[in-house]
Image (cartoon, rainbow, N blue to C red; front, side, top):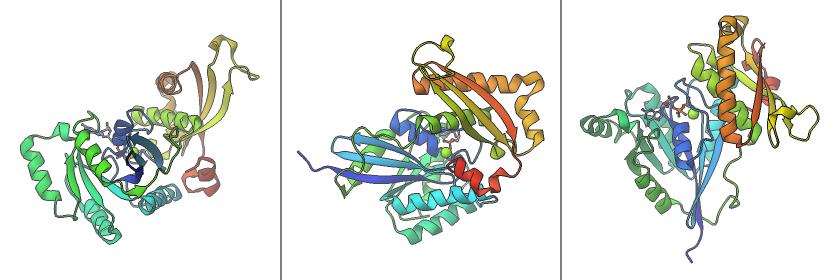
Length: 303
Ligand SMILES: Nc1nc2c(ncn2[C@@H]2O[C@H](COP(=O)(O)OP(=O)(O)OP(=O)(O)O)[C@@H](O)[C@H]2O)c(=O)[nH]1
Ligand SMILES: [Mg+2]
């Protein structure tokens, strides 16, 4: 039998490039919230895949941006930590967008780091062959990339070459994580993240950046206060959605409470799938001005 090997692989890049979509595609399971809003991911999310003798531990990270609040500083600290821990770096770019100053700044940083870096030209499904070739030419001299791989995270396209490359290059001896461990996300964290995802998908503009979700109650069947009509083996979840100001609360509630109802229903559906049991969800919207700059709040949110 061949010796076991592993690699910790950080998925990095600018906001909205498709990093979390890629993590979910690689895991074959939804672990990370994704949305069209930049700055969706706020922490590091671990997803482990064992392939034969090789264990690949992926770290999804927040999109790199200039921090305006303590929240964003913590997000960037998660990126720093992932860069430090990783053996290999997957730099995901939105190949349908222009290469700009953000990419140049990141390239400069990575050049100093001297870590094996792979460029993933994501959103391949949106590009013609001609444009893809142009993009490769535009990006290839940014850094001495080990490989450049065009992929579509959303459509799970062209992931096989990526797997082969990672299996080839994972060089650390042994395995880092136990066989049955595939993530560091708890059910509660996943629930909070997917509730936030639904808010991001159903609101626009500045509202989503000022939102956080706190799980207030988590009641399993058999415990006091469990709603018996939920059936056996279900879970009752009450969550608070924090907003930065009263105007945002009104937007979230919507006319006659229509929007929050819609958010609650789609989050409840998603949580049933993720937790694989009956779920009843209650949501409360609470104004907590300036929470993004209060360390104790950020601690409580585990950001
Ligand atoms: N067409 C297309 N869209 C994609 C692809 N991958 C991701 N997207 C979309 O791009 C948007 C951003 O995806 P995310 O995975 O949330 O991006 P991210 O890099 O994790 O973003 P942050 O967490 O904000 O840094 C979402 O609307 C995705 O559906 C792809 O391969 N093709
Ligand atoms: Mg993300």
